[in-house]
Image (cartoon, rainbow, N blue to C red):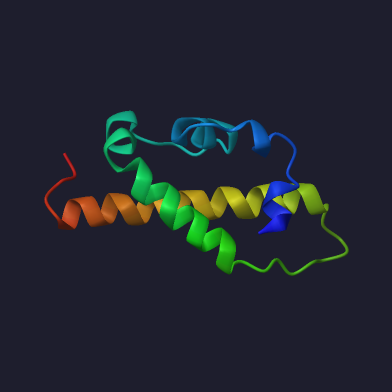
Length: 90
């Protein structure tokens, strides 16, 4: 996960909403407020499991930012799907 912490600006993120704004991931504010712990837990698990493969042609910081953005979006989408299945996805 150390690749994630090397991204400029990540250390300043202090809320679930700040992660979504930073990574430009669309979200429903009400749903995120209700499920933020689950989303961030899933995001952290995905970050921990991710071992980035380096391609010499891609710029490392941009590739890592895109990777983190994708993992956050996937974590959110999983939470939205789980909420809908549980009948909590208004």
